[in-house]
View (cartoon, rainbow, N blue to C red):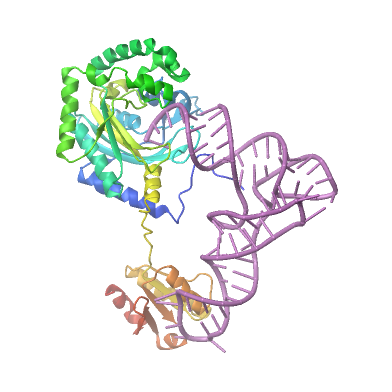
Length: 417
RNA sequence: GCGAAGUUAGUUCAGUAGGUAGAGCACUAGUUUGUGGCACUAGGGGUCGCGGGUUCGAGCCCCGCACUUCGCCCCA
């Protein structure tokens, strides 16, 4: 037996309806916010991700599926969505027509990681980007959209963690303060954090190591280093969330793993997941367009892990088994009536109903059982009498009533039922 | 990349003094020879993850590999 590649999963006929449910909600909610869809290629030049996500990040360092094509070009299976959207927006000059772009995406992404529950090598994300506005109301809109989506698919029990990283000036200043502090406590830190201290000190704040937590507890907070602009930006976002009735927890330790974030960063968490408790997250990225060769376009966005949404729906038992049903199940008493059954089936479909018949040449009784399994509204019965009189018997499966009609009138019946 | 636990029928799981496999549900058919859902009866299904080894004999013991899960790491 050939197995699927490690960390990949089939979406099978018996649970594809859950995916469709979520996809439909994504369309619904994005429509409410007037976001339109972007579909970018599944792979990009490696450069796209290196320049955007950041060379120092784990994603770029060790998790990308990078390969050379036959022309010797380095390509990478996309590990996240934002970089490609920005590349596409720059390439197609999407901002030259106006100064704002609201867009969303849904698709597969790839990271070479140790698979775990809620963490796959091919996984799916739904994400939104609000491109072109430097203002806090854009941050608020994105968070409202994400919140709306979670609620609409039935996830209410989540936590929204929010923080600000400030602008460039703030980040630079805070970075120094933090490095100094960490240096003073170097001996108390975990090996990992000691290593990360120089390259990416902010990530130390995110550590789960008990030793680190002690140090982090008393570390200087970025909130205390904010300049007036950054402070106002953050406060406006919070005020807007308040007025929209969205609850949040200010989490000074929240940093996030991609280098391109500034100002507002946020993350949705759920207790229903294991150690992969992050449902999704995002933040503002003001410098990304320039990093990818475009004109400045301050933006904000988020992404949700679809597999994780599904895990929560499972855990909450919220997955409505949208029992698929068929309008008509055609039942014939003998295989010699197959052509007649085929004609009836065809007429019903032509009239816009869904209609199927048995392909196993099963017994009459078994065909009824099969009709039940398909949750058929009507059984369309064909036997000796019906053939002889050019009729069909139609049985209402829920009320157990039946009528006999001429096959000539079947289309007519179908359009009225 | 590191540590730990798992893998037996479609599925959920049983299965010790090592003697080549079992249950529930699901599936198929009958009881009811043109009328379903319930019930009863019967039946089909398994190279016991893969490959080696020990043994007269391995689902069970040993080794390797693959995959899954739980931590770490990281993130969605």
